[in-house]
Image (cartoon, rainbow, N blue to C red; front, top):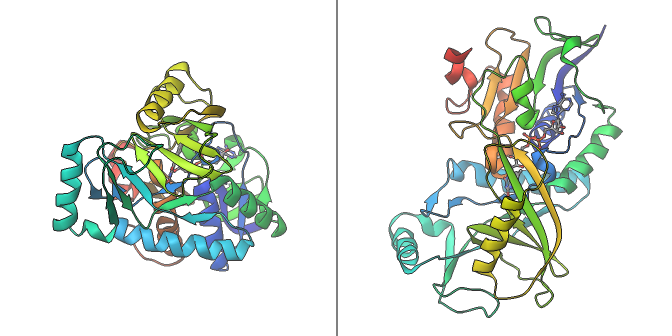
Length: 350
Ligand SMILES: Cc1cc2nc3c(=O)[nH]c(=O)nc-3n(C[C@H](O)[C@H](O)[C@H](O)COP(=O)(O)OP(=O)(O)OC[C@H]3O[C@@H](n4cnc5c(N)ncnc54)[C@H](O)[C@@H]3O)c2cc1C
């Protein structure tokens, strides 16, 4: 019987980061992936931001996640001979005077100035509705997720470790870790929101969130170097193009754009931009968000040959590299998982 150390199901952001980590630890890997239309990684703008902008707080484990993410994506750019990682400030536009004051106070009292610089006075930019001014969050930026996944896919193909097909649960022998005659130490599911259809892990409280985005063209603005944030983000892509997102919809789980979602984005753009713009494209995808907003990592409670690396939620780019390295250590040594990420916390639901 053929054997590998790990079978990974899904080559979105989660499966890709994990496969790189395991291969670098000299583990043999077989990735099984069939891209589907609503996958999150193909739609995400890929922003990483250590600050929760509404209340000006450090986001969960930002001090741990951010440095690992920056180092990891830079390393992967070199490894794959491609460029997909951009460090750029996020320019938070204050929606009102109270919010501006709140940021100024937090910045002087609560170590937030590690991440926040350059408070800018009202009306600094003619093309923005910045009547309450703004502040820059740095380091921040974005991963060009599709470019990263495509470069990785080429790499996995060259290593002969990618099977481009749908994983069929009828062919899985869960108790022994065999799939289609291939024996694995573990089969790790990285299926994004489609984990809700996985017979072994659907007991976990996923709460998928559909998101819609726009690509727009602003004829009078070739490239604003900062990512603007106020209700939605406006991410500069170059050559007058900008990505705008995103909506949050807990009711639908498909790739179809909606009239309401697109209207919401236009409304938000009009609260930010003074300039005219045209729509270039509209897209939707589904985030693998969870009820407690924390990731789902760990072994199946009954079938020890099955595991999950999922639940990267709205912040896959910043938390993915740290969690993938952490999960790789868990798989290859006897180190325990972070309590907040370990699916053990839901063993009562199994
Ligand atoms: C509109 C939108 C905007 C976002 N913006 C950001 C952002 O700015 N910053 C950020 O950090 N995150 C953002 N996210 C979230 C981010 O996209 C996710 O955290 C991340 O991409 C999740 O990756 P994943 O690999 O878990 O899932 P996915 O990207 O969904 O990948 C899962 C993969 O598994 C495959 N698969 C599933 N089932 C099977 C099967 N049975 N057989 C074979 N293959 C299978 C799928 O086809 C897919 O290839 C956004 C998401 C959306 C939708």
